[in-house]
Image (cartoon, rainbow, N blue to C red):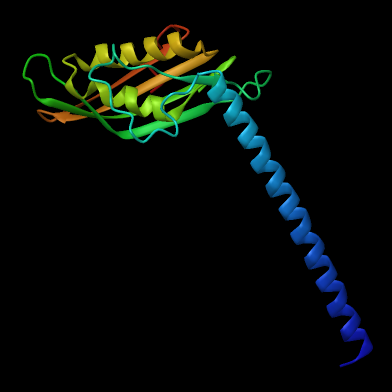
Length: 182
């Protein structure tokens, strides 16, 4: 093996070893930062569902609680998007299930909504007897009450019943409806 090739291999090995050390340091620093953030949040008693597999789904939206945590970038306007195809409520007239895709988009202010609590909150509608419009408006109202976002949009696309699909979109703060926006 030539000296030049040997030197190149040694250089690559040195670079590789250095990269592994840097990656390990960064990963360890990240793990430590996450552990500190989780510990602070748990000490504050804010999150009761995250990390608890024994948690049960609330029987109704009134019993459910949207949990929040501090916005890590409160000085920045940015959107957070949640979506689920696994939403069910009950028609108050027929007693039949109404299935929907729910999208929630919001710009957080001081607080962000924790996703597991949102999952449990939305699942609590499975036995709720309410019209689709009422359900969508209540989701927005409860969401705004929990985290006081700068802006929020809840869009509920209900599956077709009787050949007609229904989409309800509600916004916070209230805006004048624009027929062109969908």
